[in-house]
Length: 208
Image 1 (tube, rainbow, N blue to C red):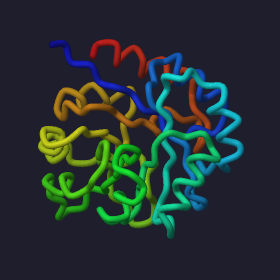
Image 2 (cartoon, helix red, strand yellow):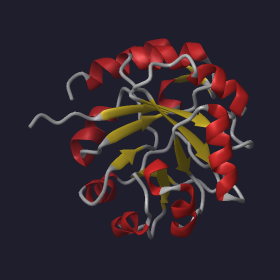
Image 3 (cartoon, rainbow, N blue to C red):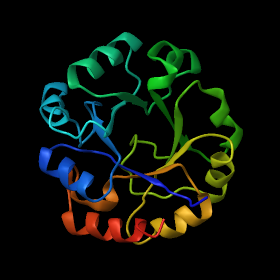
């Protein structure tokens, strides 16, 4: 069976960026609802984008330590977004309350990270991202792909962390993830995608 890796472009802030991402092969789009993020988008602005996307595109809303699971659900509904990407220190119980079928649980790979940790969370998929003391996602840092490779054999894995057209082929070959999640690696500046980098990314991913 031929291996096909899916593409998620995160940090979408405009319809233009959303549509060119889809045109370049994105099957998932991420909208950041964490107010401290430089890629933050208000739910009503996200709705103006999601209403104009092809129905097969899967949208995800990024949340970081949102106090109440019901607030996550409410924001998803308001924004017309299909899934929650929980990118903070949310517990397995918190994921369960949001609803496992609608959750991508992001885990940051710290020095003591164990690949088996991905099995602790009731979620549709797990995303691995690089650890940064100050940032939750969009760090531009890569992570240990050997650990990610072990995790990808245990669960449906989204690989994030400093991916770009230059390194993504090597990452895919080593990790074999379900999907790759690209953000800062295809940007002009935080929240503004670079069409040329997206096209280069498409060319690389066509080999997979």
